[in-house]
Length: 257
Ligand code: CO8
Image (cartoon, rainbow, N blue to C red; front, side, top):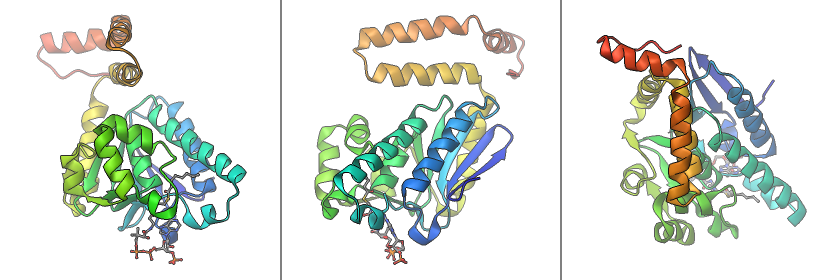
């Protein structure tokens, strides 16, 4: 039973909803623990081919880590909280299946970091991104200094973190933070279209590609090429490879199990 996380399953697509609307879905320890447990469960469920992660309500994806909770923390409490947050972001980033952030409003601080832990971001035109932690005497601690820097480079990461300024959705697209911006009312449908495209492909190949990309990011290119080669060879041991190539030659749609 979870208090703040809802999961809606429709065939191979799971939608995970952070639902703590009175605090604009802010991440306290309970939300983080429930989110981690949810992703651990989904990771063990082969029937889930793609996960959409979004916020409840019409205003916020997630407005950050819980400011009221952090105000009372000792350094030891903060250390526990930051580990909880980083473990949660890692559970999402390391999920075997694709996880897409469906950003429906404010994605600030820990909320922006949560979106950055996903494989990519689809955003409503009303969404707003930012890492305002320095205005609170903090800095991003749920992976923001690391994931944003890898995504947009150090100069842009420093600009966003040092100024704490907010990016509207279109600027986040221009920066390469958001893959696709859609009208607010069409967000759910746009995310489902992408999820369905993913779900129709070979899950074995997609999971292997995700591993290759993720592992390769942390490696020198020649070692990354080895990871790619080894993963690729494994595809030839899997029935999806036979089905995919045969379906093409027989001029029909592949039916991956
Ligand atoms: N934490 C707790 N409560 C929040 C948060 C939050 N991050 N954001 C909003 N709320 C609450 C408000 O306090 C308010 O509650 P109440 O109704 O009881 O007063 C309710 O949500 C609605 O918020 P507002 O009235 O402020 O709504 P507005 O529409 O006026 O403004 C904003 C919306 C702009 C999103 C505004 O709420 C805001 O600026 N929120 C804070 C955004 C922010 O600074 N986020 C970063 C937090 S720091 C962080 O995420 C650090 C991550 C790394 C942690 C490492 C830990 C060691």
